[in-house]
Structures are given as C-alpha cells and as structure tokens.
Image (cartoon, rainbow, N blue to C red):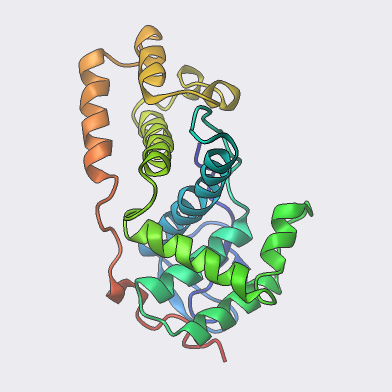
Length: 244
C-alpha cells in the first residue's frame, strides 16, 4: 500500500532534503530558491518509488528465490522503501530518463546520503549508505532501475511476471482507495502477503466492495496504464543546477 505523503521532499535543484508542511501548486527550496511544480514533483517521486520498490527490491527478492529454489512459488509483501531510497532513485532516474550526467547524479546521490533521515538503522540502510563507496553496488542499482524504466525488458519471464503481479495488486489497491475511500474493505498488509491477483479480486468481490464488472473494468484500466511512459526527458530540465 502506498504510504502517505512525506513532509520531507528532495530539492531537484540542489539535492537538499527539506520539510514542507502544506505544498501548494509549487514548492520553492529555502536553500537554493529552486522552484518545483508540485504535481510534477510527485509524479517523478512516485515513479522513482516504483522503480526502487518493484524494479529493485522485489526483483532482488524474486531473483534470490529463483536461485535458491529453482522456481517461484511464494509471493511477498515487502515494506515500502525508505524515504532516502526513493530520493536516490529519483536522482538515478534523472540520469536515465533526463540524461543528467553520471558524475552529476553520483554527486546528488552522495549529498542525499549525507542527509540520511532514516531513524531505524538496519541492513538496508547500511547498504544504501555504502553506495557512494561501493561502485559495484551503485552500478547494480542503476542497472536495475534502468531495466524498470525499460519495462523490465530481457528480465527472466517468471521474475517479470511476478513483479507485474505485485504491481497490479498494489495499483488496484490504490485505485480502490481512491474510489471507495474506505480502507477497511481492502485486505490488510498481512492478508496481502502471498496473495495473487485472482484471489485478491475474489476477496474484493465477496466483500461487495465493487461489482465483478466494475473491478474487471478497473483491472483493464490499471493493466493498460502499467507500462505507459509517464516521464519525459524534459521533465528533468534544470535538475541539479544548484548542486555546486
């Protein structure tokens, strides 16, 4: 389930993490004066979150399962990525889609990591904090995010299908939240673990949250939008211009 909006945002001008109480139509960084369109900002951040969550976290989980067991039999419910991971992914995406140079993106990532807002230190945070020192890990992250931007082309078909399944369930849940405004009719995080799209829809149907025809229409809409190119190179114009 998508988390609520964080008050912390990343300035796309100087890579400063800043707190915004109630963003209006635009956000102005108090550090460098860079102005960001709020709607466009969240489109980029949401895409970056998906790129990290599905293209990196879920991919690693399913690759490990395939390597250990030879096939994929277990679905996962992974925790949402840390805020700092999303900001790093946004910087990486600015290089992949927006054509920001490798060195500039690496500099932005280094500055983001220097402002780590994560309170709970664990293996994932340690892995993130090592990115600027471990070139191989950093390049792996970039490669995985790039593959997500390329719609997972060339990925093992079983892993690609599993990631697509996770994306579909998550996106349908989000749409249901928008439509119904009633989270009690949606499976809990525990229930979502190991759930398939078919079982998820059967559960929604039994709860009479939507008619079968309505949720089939919703599925078609989500599926048609799943791999649509949402970001363009021009969306990243002037990124990191005040990075220094």
